[in-house]
Length: 255
Image: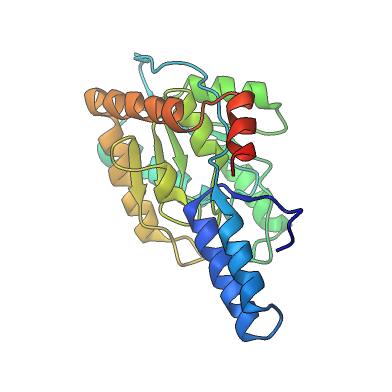
């Protein structure tokens, strides 16, 4: 709240809302004066994180639909639901689908209550599927290459409040099927991708989320619809996130 703090930068409106709620709680609990809270609130500004455009959408004609999931916290980010949805697409709709997973399969006791045993179980499960490419410990440039080769990205996170994978996919001209958790609805929508209801079942597989993902993936097989969303996603990056360092410095200086 002091004068030497010029601005507080938030990457989403959700972050701003959560911070304002917390400031109100601190005032009520006596940890912060109301005048200081008002000064802090006045300094909070929305600055979407920078993301350079990586490549215009391309029609990727092939014998299979390439779907990609990226996230080290496999369980928290909805990796189980993503796999099961892809499996149902292949079995129920006879879609020739390739599922690319880039993850270290980190478990997390604090949310999904998973363990090293769960990590090993799912690594083995995916390694036995001929239609799954499971990768880990690759650098970001290789991750981006895999994204750019894909038709659609999956980010059905149960607890990730933002999701830079969504931005990287959109910047690559690849539409995203995401959950609606956190700020996902701010960076993805029905014009540039698909947004499905998020899961409230952290310790088990949410079959409602699986069914919603299945419907969205099936829609993504419509190439005309998918390409329309891909172009809209790419344009969104150009308009909101692809700005120069000079522009950002000027914006912050004028706050």
